[in-house]
Image (tube, rainbow, N blue to C red; front, side, top):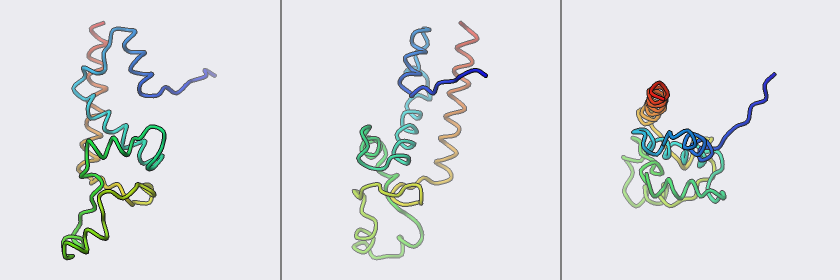
Length: 126
């Protein structure tokens, strides 16, 4: 059996760079970085050594805002008290503190597909 080793995103980027493949130039790179912050924020919550939630909050503050028909029907001061944007991410795996819609999820999935398409295209040229 072949032993495999997981690479972190930055290690993968560095390995590709050794082969003169610059992931930073991929059209999908920015969204992949955003998705990486989402993943780490979900896995580790607020205050991990990577500060992924803080970085994500800078990039996409809208992902920390709970919006649905219930909150839309509340008076604004009650909405603010119930769903403060600056709350720490504590339980993202149980659906609290970080909110990604089905459309946003589909968009991220599409960007992952785009990354692989870009990579295949570049590898075919190498």
